[in-house]
Image (cartoon, rainbow, N blue to C red; front, top):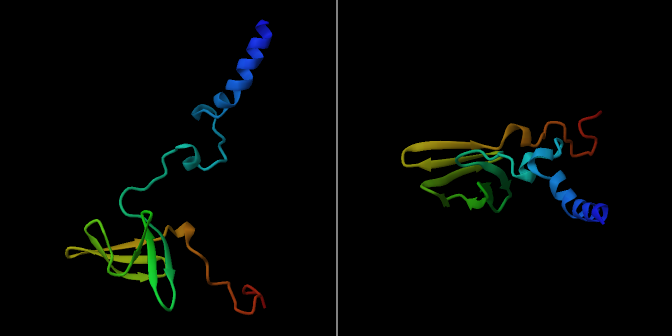
Length: 115
């Protein structure tokens, strides 16, 4: 009976113990299990440019030219960068370099820069 009870408790609690913070998978991104990865302040996550509209996601909010986030006003949106005006101060936000798309090797003929 003692072994049966032990196995029952281990079966129920085992997965919870293994996934506790002390035994997290080192290959999983830390944000998946509550690790600290957030940057402080405004963060430009993405920009979207089309013939009809320019928009950006800043700190989780979809914004367009003229919109405000806090006391800052969006005055310009270009690929991977947004310019904000806060009073007389100009703030430039850029997408993290490691997240920028590489457009150099993309050809319209589908060869991806290969000749």
